[in-house]
Length: 132
Image 1 (tube, one colour):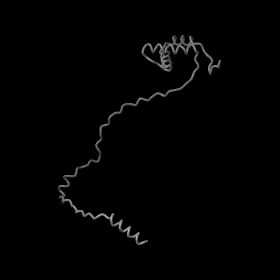
Image 2 (cartoon, rainbow, N blue to C red):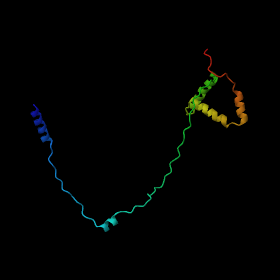
Image 3 (cartoon, one colour):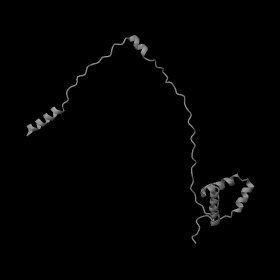
Image 4 (spheres, rainbow, N blue to C red):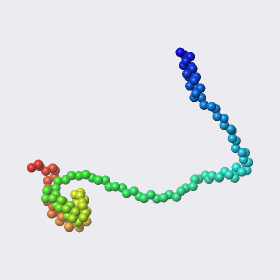
């Protein structure tokens, strides 16, 4: 049985053996030393610097702050009224956008008008309201 295995192995190796390919050896033509000096480019010590293009300055996004606050229901309904009013003027807004617009309007006021606006708003108890 050992001999049959050898026959199979030898038969497989005989089938897979590829014929030898003979390649011709090619040698380049001799070049005179004088022509080699003319062909070789001269290299400088410093690489050529490409002109730098200025990148546009990146605009940093401002960080957002999440906060919660208590507001009387009457003033909360005013926010809805203002949202509807903005919608009629073909400019849909969110509550946060209305509040931010109000902050900008307060910041643009003079000190006297700002103090009058603050006095018109009553102080409320801070914290979560009781469930009634």
